[in-house]
Structures are given as structure tokens and as C-alpha cells.
Image 1 (tube, helix red, strand yellow):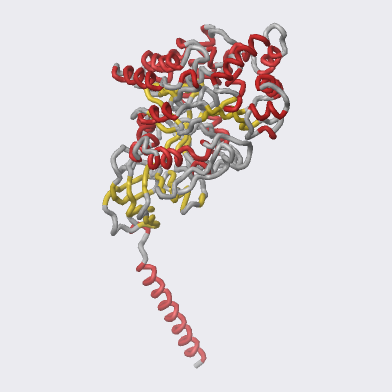
Image 2: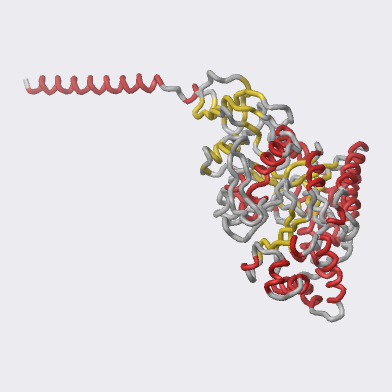
Length: 539
């Protein structure tokens, strides 16, 4: 009897378990299986600006892994996650073709790239102006060590290569030195760089002849790279603005590659209005079959170093210590002072120069040279010399005219760039472009002033840079493209950063996807960081 009861109990328990498992299985069978999801992410009801310059249109976007796999009517599709973009604009993620964020992105405290993502930026080009890393493979490893919030495209920096091979000497390279510079350019291009950057405005790049730049650009051209240059003179310091732009045209023509006049401007009152001539010269070159482009940030002020702005290049030869020696030389200082006086006038005077950072004395940050000099009973030039002897002041320089900014912006060959960096929140008084470039162009110049229309502004941030630099599969909303996407509210988008209070994030960006994954969701930065270091030949 005991055996029979025990057997009955076992049968009841077994039956109950089977029923429970069956019910659970039935519940699970009602849920979509792994293969039943059409997409990982679905974006519906948004006004899509696809990056081509066409007007917005309604369509849905299906994303799987890191790719846009379907564009069209997808209301009945099933996705793991859906963004209802009703009332919002959907665009490709923005490409910043001139960024100083490289060092910041290698810092784990900054590598999430929050100021960039809140503007909709998903790809940045680093090593601009001829500066930055010579060893691109090491830079790649450093960037990826802790993960990065945005994609990075590397350029080969001419000035850094020249410095590594020749130092800060003002001379023509010996044949062996030239071959070594060429080898380093080739090494960088084989390592995945997108082209050669130069800065003949700065030392030691200023010591290079046009012929040297052409020879090295040919090495980049052999790998389908581009050439981008902080031109030799944006004002009338040396050869003049017109001749400096012509130098980029010459390099592009002779090396047979796209040439980019980076952060194009007419700097200072002596050259205001010259934008008309520059545009005509670029148009003429393009009509002759030369690929010439420009990029621009939407501000009336630039940023650089006080030394670069005021000190003649010959006085910088050999580095900062040699410069200080010359500033203290009774024979050389009068000549330097005269040229500094002329350069200060080119910048519009001491009240148009504001300090961004100065390590020896942070109390001057945010103040103008005029204010600092007045508080210390010095002339502006005396004050500038004193500061330069003790360090390397960073400045913002208010030096552009609105007419020139607008004329350059309207050109179909002008891309958008920030020329901005990535610094700790609250550190120094940087140029507001670090936080606001792309939001500002959309808000102020596309929707308020209507200098350009919105589709053209988006094109300048997406398909145009992708085309110029050969970034395959990015910069456009289309099937087969990588899913770098920005979703924003046009009524809310705005740049909050100002010259006096620059550490303020842009507003209005709702979602940003980097390689198919959320980097920004409902205004919040998400982890893990999905950015990649792009390789020119294998993206």
C-alpha cells in the first residue's frame, strides 16, 4: 500500500511539472524568436534628410547590426527597439573633417565624446594642421584602449613628420631626409590614413616649400588620399590670402588629389571682402578640373596660439627656448617687436584677442589682451612678450567679417568642420566651437539667418565630406550604409556655448547611433562606446 501511494504521489508531481513546463513553453512560443525580428532598431515617422541635399521626406529606416538594411515603408516590421521620430528630423551622423579631439578621445575620462555626440557628430578627422601623431598605429591603439564614443579617421601630419626628421630648422630637406619623410607618409597611408594634413602657417610647416608639399602629397595620392591645409597665410602676414589659397590649388593640381582649404576665412580687416576673389579662384580651378574644396566653422572668431598670431616664424626657429633668447636679444628684439606690432594690427587690435588658456596664470583666461595689459600697466605688446616668455598662451581671435563668413558658407564645395577639441568640462575658456559648431550652423545659419537651407547644411556635414575623403558607406541614409544616424528636434536644437561661457552642451539632439548602436538615447550618453578607428582601404 505504501509503495502504491508513493507511486501515485510521484505521478501527480510529475504531471504537475509537465503541465507547468508546457504552459511556460506555450508562453515562450508566443514571443518572437531570435530570427523573427526584422531589425535590431527601427526608426519610423521621421522627416529624413538623407544627406544628398534633397528636401526631407517621410520614410522608415531598418537597422541590423551596424548597417542600414532597409529604407522604406516599414510600419508592420518587428524590431527589438523602435524610435518613433514623429516631429523630428533624421539625418546621417555628422562628419567633422577638422578636429583636435584626438588626444581627448584617448583619455578615458573624455573618450565618451559627450560634447560631440550632443551635436550629432559621429566621425572626426584627427591630426589636422600638420600636427598630431606620426605613429598612427600607436595612436590607433591608444584610442581603442578604453573605447571611443565616435569614429575616428586619421590624417598623416606633415609638420610632425618634418619635425621628427629635420627638427625646427628653417631649411630645405636633404635628399635622404626627403626620402624619410616620404616613407613616413607612405607608412601612414598604408596604415589607413585618409590623406596628408599640412599647416604651413605654423612652424615647422612654414619652413616647407610648395615643392616639398607637392612631393609628399603625391605619396598620399598614390593611396587615394586627400590633402588638407591650414594655409600659409589667411591674412596678409607673408604671401597673402590669395596666394596661400593658390598654393593649395597648385598642390591639388600637381599631386592630382583633392585639396582642401581648411577652416577657410579672410582673417583681419586688411583682407575683409577678399572672399569674393577666393571663391572666383577656386571656381576657376574647379572648372579646369582641379578638385578643390574647403571646410569652415560657423563663427566670427578663430582660435590659435598667441605666438602663432603675433610672432614672426623666423623668430620661432629652433623652438620656444630659442624664441625667448631672441626676445631678450638687444639686436633681434626690435625687429621682432616691429613685426608683432604689425601682426597685432592684422588681428584687429588687443581688444579682439581673448585668452583661452595659460598654464602659468589661469586668471587671465577669458580676458582680452587689452584688459590684462591695462590691469598690469603694460602696453599690449609688452604684455604679450611677457606672457610668451613664460609660456604658450592660447587665444580666441575675433577677426572675421560676416559677409565673408556667409559667402564661403554658401559654396557647394564648403564642408562643415569644428576645428574644436575635447577638454575637461570647466577647464580654461576654450572656443565655443568645441561644444556648438554643428548645432549653431543648423540653428543660426540654416533656420534663422537662412544663409544656407537645411538640406544643404546637412549635406555639408555628411555626404560632401564622405565624398571628398573617400569614406565609403557613411554620410548618407541609404541601404547598405553604416548606421551612423542623428535624430533631432529642429525647434529645440541650439548651441548654448558662448565665448565667455563656453562649457555648455548643445541642446535638441535626441538620439545618435554609432555603428548601429545607441550612443545617445533620449538625451543620455550610453555605454559601451561603439566608435571605431576607420581604415581608409577597409571601412
